[in-house]
Image (tube, rainbow, N blue to C red):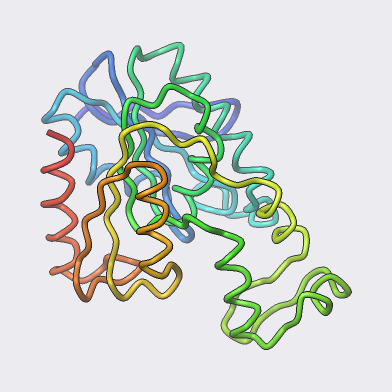
Length: 232
């Protein structure tokens, strides 16, 4: 497979596949990196698509930028990526994972996205943060007062993040979208997925026993079959 390393406004990115007029932007989730797109790119290239992926702040070649792993930094970068893609390809689609899917939809909800494949997407960030506050036993008043609180389960809760999520919601997502969801996803309840899918006419595939992160051989094989079905 052809691999080309590029910079998108100084951000390290990689392009996979033979030259084409159409491309996916692959957006990884937390603890991911741009090179994980190579596995998806094998299926994409077989169907005439290239794939471009970049490291989000604090990930891959950008390990020192973890203090920028916030949507108010990520979303403008996704917009820069779209501008870059628009100069190179005629048709663009999205593959997004977890929080990467949420940021991408916020960035691209007014763009002409051919279609989207979303794996374990975060669809309601406000609800997720409020859930985490309950898990940590933190009130809204306490979070507003302290601004940032580190939880015992390793997540940072931020009043600025909650406020941003409340002010920025996915309201105009209109492109054909397929969602892969695990029934044991601990970050997004199934009713959230069902409501989002109904509101935005999405196709949903549920893996019984699947988790938020697809990592076992059974889960990865299931995801591969879903990708091959949808990418055709």
